[in-house]
Image (cartoon, rainbow, N blue to C red; front, side, top):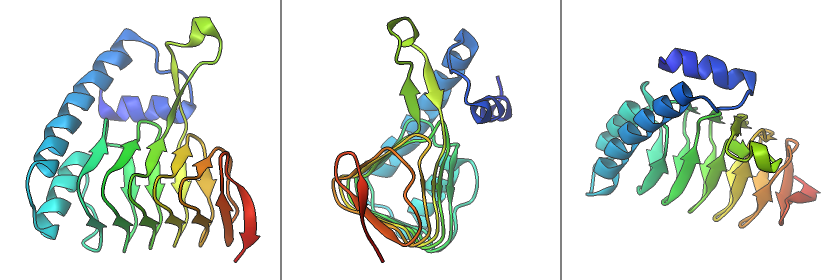
Length: 186
């Protein structure tokens, strides 16, 4: 399986449940761990961090990206970053389904992006189903938040610290809580 084949399959939202897909995911996870271990094991200049992230993502990252390691991902090849994005320490990107951060996004400490979910029926539990997470422009995600698969967060929205976002968040709003709910308009 190639990366292009995998990404095409992911876009269908169908289960990641074949031996070929599992082998590919294991290979990609090994590569991601190799790069993230290097990234997280010593101090790197901002340019060195961006170079390692470019290798991890399989494409150049913007020169305006700022990331404070440690940074974690178990895939890496389905992360798309806009200009002037900041990602604070200890964030986890489970990006098989795709994570897109629009221009100007600010991501707090310990934020989790989870683009896979297991089947709910006991017999389907071993299967995982991908769906993308998309953040618009200027989204601020507070520390210790979790954004779940299939969620879109609109431009200028704020996710309060500790929120678990299970549904789309409209632009120009604040959402928080578990599960996250509308708090107020900006």
